[in-house]
Amino acid sequence: MSKKNIILIIASLFALSMLLSPNLAEADIIITKSKHTESTVEGQPQPAKNEEGKTWIAKNKMREDMAESSIIVRLDLNKIYTIDHSTKTYSEINLPVEIEKAVPPEAKQMMDVMQTKSSSVRETAEAQTIRDWLCQKFLVEVEISMMEMNIPMAMEIWASRDLGIDLSAYKKFSDAILSLNPFTKGLSEEFKKIQGYPVLTISSVKMMGTETKEREEVISVEKKDVPSKTYNLPRGYEKIPYNPFK
Image 1 (spheres, rainbow, N blue to C red):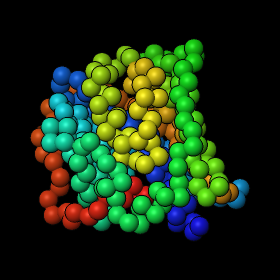
Image 2 (image 1 turned 45 degrees about the vertical axis):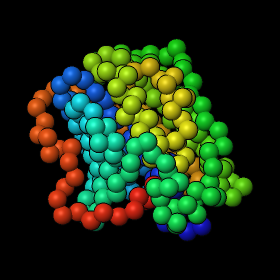
Image 3 (image 1 turned 90 degrees about the vertical axis):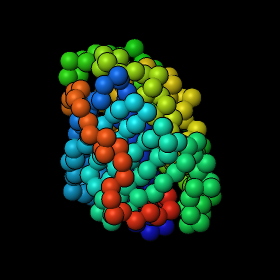
Image 4 (image 1 turned 120 degrees about the vertical axis):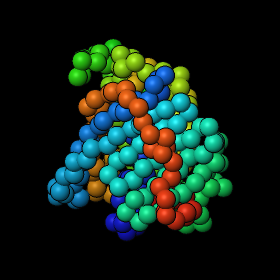
């Protein structure tokens, strides 16, 4: 397997972290986050990367931005849009997501050789205050099987109920996003064990001599008026088939 494919697979596994971003309240909300990524290949450190992301929320709508990509959830239209600003392309997926029907043949080939072997979410009694929010620790373990090779992913999640978020509405967004990834679509029930909104998520994936770690943290939560176009597709972008490995 090429290094490019390994990177794509790791990126698709980290897409799981995106489910931790959406939320909902009566007014529009903006969440600002920071993400730090570092990796090693055959024990050699690679250049670290720091990014800032934002989440915009309105009733039945959500937009998540990180680096040069966006994801828009439109529960009012039963649609999810994934957007690549670097190539000015987007993909449109109907809700509820039927991932096997939504992806192109090359993605189906990858799905055929990879399966979610096991997954679990464990609540702990540990608590700490992060940026004025009281948080509880949850541990997540996911193992992917690929061509007789096991790929472990571990996540440490600190979730809070103090952010003023409608958690039942948040679950609708998270379920929709989980269904976009063939390796996380079955995790909805497990993630119901996480009580609160994830304020800090620390993730790691190990695969074929490559280890990638991410740390994503909520920096601020504020309410303000958000233009309706925030939740619309950008003009002039080309529609392409959805591929969860890109």
